[in-house]
Amino acid sequence: MGFGYAIMKGQNGMEGIIRETAGKRTVQARGLPAGETCALYALTGDGAEKCAEAAADRSGLCRLTAAGGGPLFAVVGGKVRLWEGGDETYLRACGFVQGRSAPPSEEADARRNAPDALAKAEAPIKEQAEPTADGEPAYTLRPAGTGENVDALPEYRRSNAAKP
Image 1 (cartoon, rainbow, N blue to C red):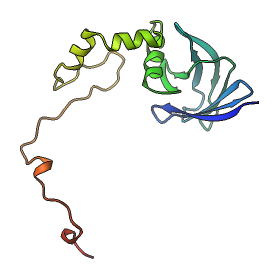
Image 2 (cartoon, helix red, strand yellow; image 1 turned 135 degrees about the horizontal axis):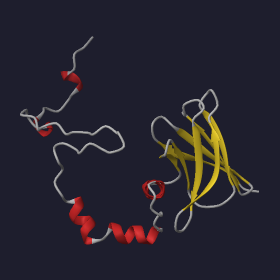
Image 3 (tube, rainbow, N blue to C red; image 1 turned 90 degrees about the horizontal axis):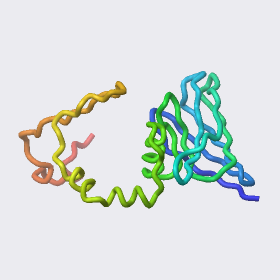
């Protein structure tokens, strides 16, 4: 009988814990608005499979169970809010939610190393981001300051600090 815990990464104040007992994984998600529906999915080789769906209780807690394998992720309000593992799981889950099939790991690596991807990564950062279609706030970069660089500041020493 196997038994273990894993912590899920989360967004927007959500937290999740996966508890595995005898091949069955139970996800406890918290930080949801009361009554909000949370859907649990498991990534497969070419997409994702829905495992469970439940509404959060008054305290914002939701428990979901998954029987199959594959990295888990939770969708709340049409967006990925919890995921197991690293950035690749998150990106594959977002691709699935946006209507594209989630790419297998080898395809994702090949795409990441393609010359077009490198050219886009080296493109200069725009001073103002385009507003997003889904209502998420657009972030802007502030202009460069005119003061000294951090390297030009004097080294901090305890003797320089004000004494009480």
